[in-house]
Image 1: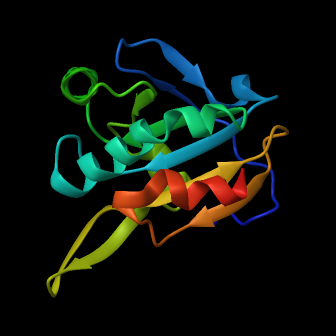
Image 2 (image 1 turned 180 degrees about the vertical axis):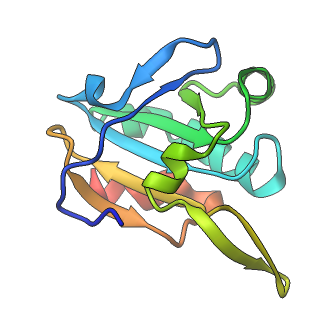
Amino acid sequence: MIQEKQEAPDFTLPDAQGRPVTLSSFRGKKVVLYFYPKDDTPGCTKEACALRDGWNLLTGKNAVVLGVSPDDAVSHQKFQAKYGLPFTLLCDTDHSVLEAWGAWGEKSLYGKKSVGVLRTTFILDEQGKVVKILKKVDTENHAQQVLPYL
C-alpha cells in the first residue's frame, strides 16, 4: 500500500490518443493523480468538471492533472470532448496500476458489495514523493480540495 512521504511508484499507461505517458516524466512539476471509476457517470463527471473549472488555479501551482480509469481510449476521447477537459486521461483497462496504487478493491454502494475502482487522489511533489492521499474525495469541489496540498 502506498503511503504519504514515500516515492511514488512509476508507471506508463496510454492516454486517450494511445500515446504512452510515464509518471516520472512529470518530475519538476506537482502531480494531481486521480483514480476514478468510469467516464461520463454522475460522480466522475462532477469530479472531472471540478478539476476543469479549477484548472487555472492548479496549473498556477505548477501542477499537472492525470486521471486514471479502466475505460479505453475511445471512452476517454468522448469524455474529454463532451466536457472540455484540459488534462490527460489515462487508460488502465487491466487495472494493474489501479491495483498497484491501492485504488482497486471491494466497495459498497447502497449496501451492495462489488469490486472496482476506489475513488482516490494522490498529490505528488516535484520530486515524485506522495504529499497527500485523499480517500474521501469531494467530487463537486475536487480542485479546491487538492489546492492546500500544492
